[in-house]
Length: 201
Image (cartoon, rainbow, N blue to C red):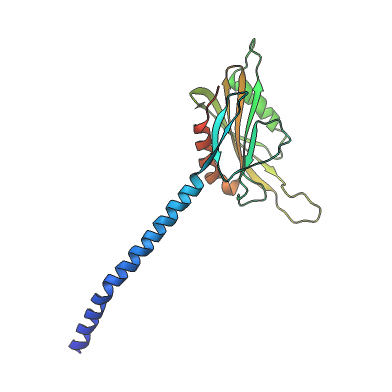
């Protein structure tokens, strides 16, 4: 009986270095996978508009898309887990130098424009800065029907959005993120990195 217990202990001690080796190899593999993922998701493309002087970096995996609106840039995440794809856009508007509007006035105009969206709901506003310039940030939500085909089952999507409005010289710029609610936190982190990279004229 005593001999059997001694044999079991010796057997366990012999296996211990192998178990530690397997654990270390698995840990190293997980670490390498994490580093590769960070490298892939951290890559960016640089957008530069020569006419306005705007320059910023957005996620490399996002692709350019056509827009019905007059925008300088519109990109979307093709891998967003929704029929409505997460998108980022940059708009530019010329201002009247004789009577430039305040940031609050520009925000109020946008709220009026956005009021046409289905189930539009203004959430919050806050002062901010973009490339050292005073800006105003607004959060809002609305509902879209991304698949609108007869007899095709598709639920509406709740969209959350954040927009920075900033005035630089005689122009106003609108940096806007729109994402399905289930992708909001991930998209917002990437958006804030994009805004932080922005260089204005």
